[in-house]
Each structure stands twice: as structure tokens, then as C-alpha cells.
Image (cartoon, rainbow, N blue to C red; front, side, top):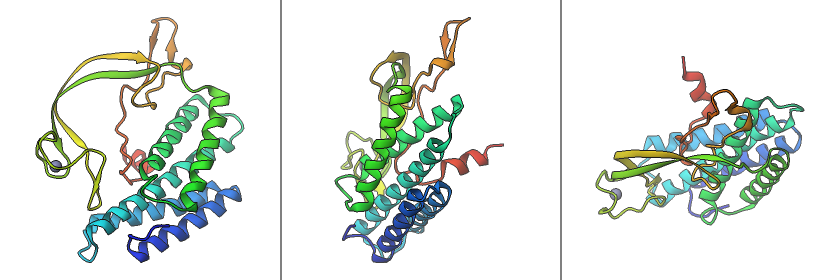
Amino acid sequence: MMGFGPPDVVSFVNDTMNVCRRCLEAGDPWKARLAASSAAMHCHSILQEQRADLTGDEKSAVLLLGILSAAYRDFADCFELLKKRALKHKEVEQLWTRLIDCQERTEAVQGLLGGPGLDWLVAQASGAYDHFVRQFGPGEHFFSPIIIVKRESCSICGKDLRGCPHRAGVIYDGKRCRGVVEDMEMRSCDLVRVPRDRRCRVWPWNFDEKSKQFSAAVFTMFDTDDLNDPRERLKDKP
Ligand SMILES: [Zn+2]
């Protein structure tokens, strides 16, 4: 799959992806999810440990492998929902979010990782997306907040992002650089056709006839490189 990752991690993730594919092809998303999740968490713990024997490039490779594993986990969630005959509204919304999560994660690693494991997932996820869109459409309206960012610091060095040597979206030694908003002003929230975050989709069933008001997410906290299990996070809530 890739040459610059630590061999033990590359082979572990590759083997797990194979197990995952076989489980999905056999119609067992639950087992596939378990395998993908274990690979994502394995990469996550290696990065947390700050292993001294790994070079910066190797740490970056571990992050990419973790993102790919998390994309497999997203897809296993989609697969599980797609298997159901009738979806409840909440499940349709959940399926859409997972499809977008999976797409954004595969896009984040494309061009940096290669191999049949990624190609297979990209093809499957795009097939699932098309299937979804045929049934529920690509989305007519989305919420999009107009935010004026006054100060943004770098997640790697903590300095002002405009003046530091890092670029948002680029991976440095296993860490993806992003802007941390320090000061901002939210001006308004628009209803748009092409949003920045497609998770903020307005669903017809969330329209209240009486008050003529929509309810939908204004923004989400999704991060491609957050390898934690979204289901575990839900479980943590009281
Ligand atoms: Zn920086």
C-alpha cells in the first residue's frame, strides 16, 4: 500500500482492511466495523504514545492509515443502515452524515496513500452515495453560517496561522495542521445550495409548518483526523 510507514503498522492495517472487505462482501457490517475500528484505534494510540523510534514521515503515514481505517468504519456504519428495509428519519440523517464523513476521509488520504484497499472503498462509498441520492436527493438546502474569523492560531505551533510556517490541511510529523479560532463573530446563518459542510442539510421532515421554521445543524465538529469512534462519544454522554 505505501512504502514509508512503519512496516508493522502498514501490515496490520492492510490485513485489517482485507478482513473488513471480506466481512462487508459477506454482508456482515458489524464484524467489519469492529475490525476497522480496532485499526483506527491502533493508529490513534501509536500517535498518542509519541513513539521515539518513528520518524516524522512514519508518524504521518500512521495518521493517514488511521484516517483510512476510520473511513472503513464510517462505511461499515453506512452499510449497516443501507441493509435496513425502512429507515426512520433520524437514520436517514445519520446515514447522510456517515456518507459525508467517509467521503471526506477518503479525499483526505487520496493522492497520499494508494492501493486496492483505498480504491475499493472509494468505489463502494460512491456507489452507496449514488444509491442514497436516488432515494433522498442530493439536498436542496443547507445551513451555512457567515463567520468573521478575527484571529486564528496554528494547531501545531500555536502562533498566528498567517505568520507561521505551517499550512492548514498539511500533515507534519503525524499531526494535521488546522486553524484554531481564537476570536470570531457570527454574522448570520444563510440557507444555501452549496454549503461548506454538507452535514448541515435541511431535511423536509424538520420543517415546522406552524412556525415556518427549519431545524438543522448550523455547523458540525467533524475532523477527518479525529480517529475516535463517534459511537463511543455518544455513549459517553449522560
Ligand atoms: Zn504553525
